[in-house]
Length: 280
Image 1: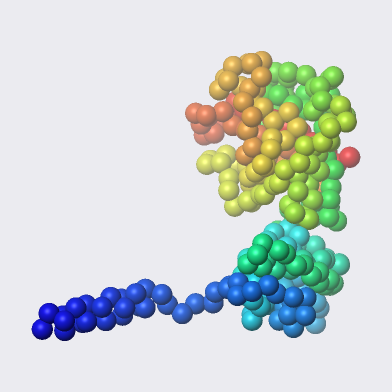
Image 2: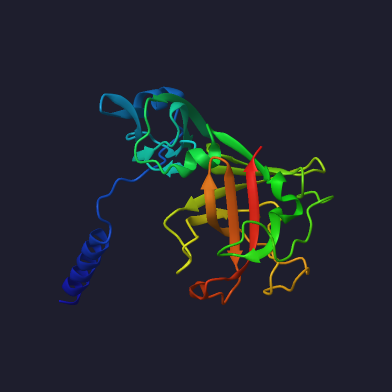
């Protein structure tokens, strides 16, 4: 009887173990894949809409004995099957990367031509142009292109400007936004460059802040990306910030703000740090 109970226990544990592992689409590394296998199993297909080659792309690497990842320019996808959205018309390159169990990698590039983009936020083209767009300080504002002002109303740093002249990130410096790799680059006047990434979300706006049209996030601060207000003390050098309210974004202007903590927009004004850029 004791042996029967033990056997029953083993069976029940085995059933429990199996039930906790549902069937799913997994990527498995069973050996070192080859380019022949990639040519056989990996494909990229483009959806059409209204008779046009669209920006929606289907990725497939089912059957490949390696981990699959895809770089499609404005983002990455990890898996054997996926549907992604390109953000630029014209020729686009999609790079497939196979990772073998021994750590080696093989890549294959696919080129697709997009006739028309559907469902793409217009901010991609405004911020990145046809792929990369360079921005610099608004020369019409001089030193007032950066500093403290009224986050709800100011169109320059009209409360206090720490000055941009003679600083590596000041007048003459540029920053660029690129679709490829969502790359964000600062080119400083001392000849150095700093690289990072960016993202934006036009659905995120500051509560009751009717000037806010979205949020820009960067992995490194924008040019002179330090606060100038009471949160750190005027002229103290501020603190680095990397999330900004977009208060104006069109083909000719990129205006950013960082609103001081405790600001109540319903009062009709609010202290903040402001940045004013134009295309170079």
